[in-house]
Amino acid sequence: MTDGQGMLELMSIRQSERRYIDKPVEKEKIERIAEAGRLSPSACNGQPWRFIVVDEPALRLDVAAATESKVLNMNSFVRQAPVLIVIVREKSNFSSRAGDKLKSRDYSLIDIGIATASMAYQATAEGLGTCIIGWFDEKKIKEILGIPKSKKVELVLSVGYTENTLRKKTRKPSSEIVSHNRY
Ligand SMILES: Cc1cc2nc3c(=O)[nH]c(=O)nc-3n(C[C@H](O)[C@H](O)[C@H](O)COP(=O)(O)O)c2cc1C
Image (cartoon, rainbow, N blue to C red; front, side, top):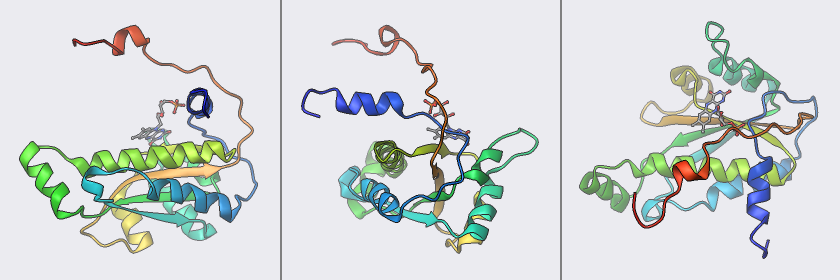
């Protein structure tokens, strides 16, 4: 990765995968994905997260069902994924929370996004497909997994092998989103 291309290559092949094949994911791969989350940066190093790896079939299907909306035709693919990682937002440390107040920010939510992205890219590096899921019934997931009421479930990451081909990325052109020295 010394030529500066490695990360961009990884980013160009990560895409939201919404079809998974029936192939189990190796435990070591899941451990390394969770490790990528653990190593992520966070405001004041608050690490306001807990990653729940859900791979028990019955439990996993219950969580998948809690992400699905039949009316909006959303997330029915989640049930195919052999592993779901539920990302829970924990209370951050004192400094980060003080920063939130002083700067009117929500640093821990930013931290959660970074950790989730790190895990998604590690999964890509492992040859796995993922989809970040932000649409779900939080109350149901909390009940299913015994997550205390005081915590927040922020995202679910579906993980599995896929045979999908790469789609062309739909992104704004850099001329629209990158500027130099001024807005
Ligand atoms: C915070 C967040 C929430 C998302 N929630 C969902 C979701 O509930 N269901 C889904 O199918 N995709 C979801 N996505 C995936 C986005 O639709 C996808 O990343 C975006 O369209 C860009 O496509 P790509 O990931 O294939 O590059 C979510 C992505 C993010 C970052």
